[in-house]
Length: 83
Image (tube, rainbow, N blue to C red; front, side, top):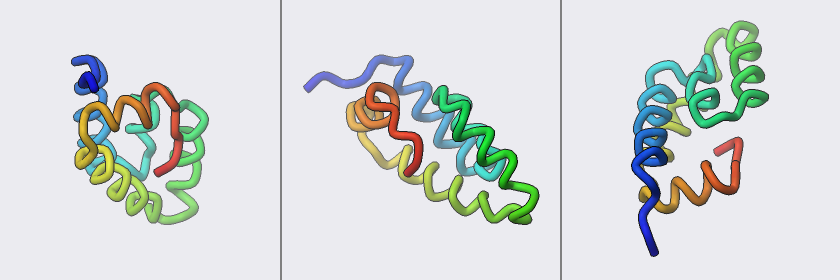
């Protein structure tokens, strides 16, 4: 198997860090091109009193622990929007 491109790897790192730090606002979803999911998280952030941050934290950890190829296949090519 070949590893993902450097663009995929930079998306992985940027999305993972943003998910951990700003996950409740859905910033990582916008980085990956998931506009609908990002808007849902942004809108849900305020009524949930920030509980969506837990989802962002979990997704950030998942992004950063996947191999580059697995991340590229799952989130860049197959466009898996949630977890």
